[in-house]
Image 1 (cartoon, rainbow, N blue to C red):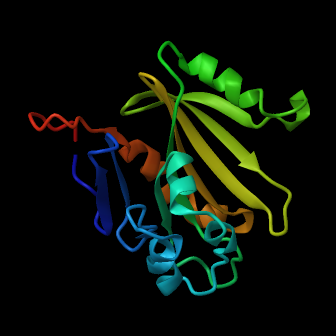
Image 2: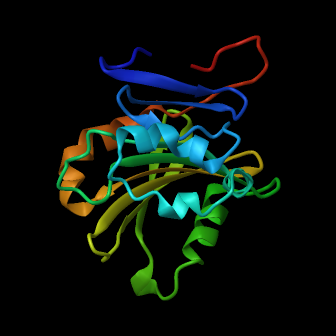
Amino acid sequence: PGLEAGWSLRERPSDGFAIALPSSWVEMDLDAASTSEALAPIALCCPEMDLSLWEEQTMSSIRRSGLKLFAVDPSSDPEAVYYGIVSVTRTSLGEGWTLDMAMEAVLGQYGDDESKPAHRRVTLPVGEAEEIRVADGGDPPVWKVTYLLVQYDAFWFVTLGCEAGFADDYASIFETVPMSFRWMHNCGHCSCW
């Protein structure tokens, strides 16, 4: 399928996926040797962004976390404290997991029923996913939506987030991004896109 004008396909054949993002969004360089190198593209375009939590980590720990893509909207509203972001994370768990089992494990990380996030089953082009919506009460409040997918032996989390007061500004982007997510074979004989 074609991409909307102003969007680019971010392909990760070695990780087995592709996702479309607005062309202006800047990615963390996960192949960099050091955390400061990895963050350089973001720091350059978003000098006001607080990167201290990232800077405390090593590239080895970032890679072990399963992070496969982290992108930031450099054109986030100047009034926003929290930038618009998209991340893709993969967690290996072993074969035999279903989406229902994965969702039960995710919900088990929350305490009582009142703290559990809103969620619903949705269909993306790659198959069924669980859409999980979380609005935290921080200062400023942050709004996140995560799409949980299960493929073979792994959970995949496609997470989109922004400052809650700017959620309407990101609505169309946050609808388009998960619909663009595709599995990619690393076989060299076919194209899933």
